[in-house]
Each structure stands twice: as C-alpha cells, then as structure tokens.
Length: 287
Image (tube, rainbow, N blue to C red; front, side, top):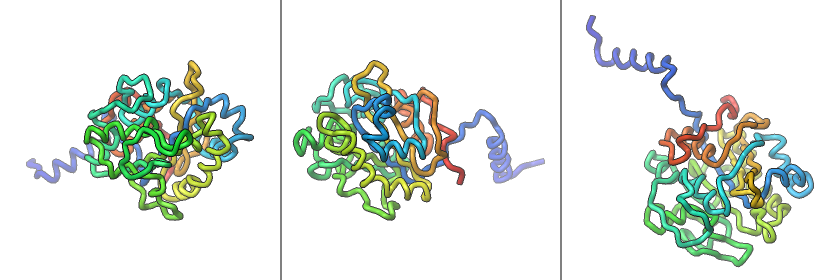
C-alpha cells in the first residue's frame, strides 16, 4: 500500500509522541522576571527573615522556596555571568574592563523570536556603560552582566533600560518574554549600604504587583542572590513565585539550573555549563 506524504508525516508525528527518547520542553511561561539580590546567606535568611525581610519570608512560605541553592563563585560578577551566559567566563573579580562576544541568553531568545530586556535601578540612561552611577548606594555595572557584551557590539544598548521603564501595572503584559531587574545597592541587601529591611520594602513595593499578576497570567517571578556572605558553601536563598506549585524544592541547584529552566521553556540550546544542569521541573501550576 502506497502512503501519501501527509499520511506519512502524521504517522511519524504519532511515532515521535510515543517515543520515550524524545525530549519534552517545559511549558512556556508568558513572562519571566528575574530579580538579583546581593550577598545574603541562606542561614541568615532563615534566622532573620521574619524580622528583617518579612515580605521575602512570606514569599518563601507561600511560594516555592529552594532550600539547597548554591552560587558558583565569589565575588559578585562571575555569578551574574554564569546565570546570563552559562559560564563565569573565567572571571574572578568585579572589574569593568571585561569584554565578551560569546552567545548568551539574550542572543538566543532574540534569534528564536522572543524578547528580552534588563531594568537596572539608577542606570543613568538607556544603554549606559558607566561602571558606577549614583554613588556607593547606586548602580554598578558588575551587577549587570549584559553590559559586558554590549561593549563588543553583541548586545543591543536599547535592551538595557533604567528601572523607570519597567511597567507599573496593574497589567504587566507589555513586559518582554524574559527580563532581569537589578536593584541599586541601596536596595539589594549588600551591606553596609543595602540593608535587608530596605531591600525587602523595595521588593514589596516594586515586585508584589507583578508577583500577584503572574499567578493569574502564567508568568514567573524568580528572586535569587549572586552569592552568600563570602562563606565556603555559597548557600543562598532563592524563591520562585507566580504560576507555580507552592512548597519547598530540596534538590541541590544553582544559577545554571535556572538558566537551563529558561532555555527549556523557550526551546533554546543550552549554553555552557547549563548543558549539564537539570531544568527545575514539576514545580509549575497546572493549566
């Protein structure tokens, strides 16, 4: 019996659907927002959270709390690079004079037809490449890894925005598919400038609206830290909120696992070390 082309393709699709070796991507979130905080250990969070960071403690108790999350390195910059590009790029400092042209998350999203943007508090203007703005409590380039690709011309300056460009709500559908939010040092928990209570209040004021909207609109808020307080375990808190199943996630994970999760959601090729990292699965609310 001869089989026409359409019948053959339909049969092939049915075969693939039942084949256990075919990888299945995670369900795609409409919007993913990643907020990066600074230098806070998991132990400090558990010990002082109720008193110093009540909003974050509330999220940890009512959303999804990663109990065994570890950063990759010290100091700050290598961890940001790991999450954004799948590699620390062999960086061991926080200096401004690094320049990269490798493929990173924004590249992959844009090439696949998705959107990306970064929103940084106290960034003086769209696409600015300054090392610091606003003084000791302000903006620092070392917290914004995409800028290190921008200066080689592989990241568009238009995608690096002041935080004032972040949608104010109550409708957040204008957000790109994936975005990063970088608070200033005054609001990122990095002592002695960014005290935890100030950061907690900033998060509640600026992210709670999106968090509540995300739950009803198939979207995800991730709050993570770059590193702990220079401890050997680099154990940090991390929270997933929005359209997720609440609880505690006990598996040992890191920034590469977050990157791999986003790559799986959007059908992207894993970058660098994220290829060997498992996506964070079985955590999303049923649709």
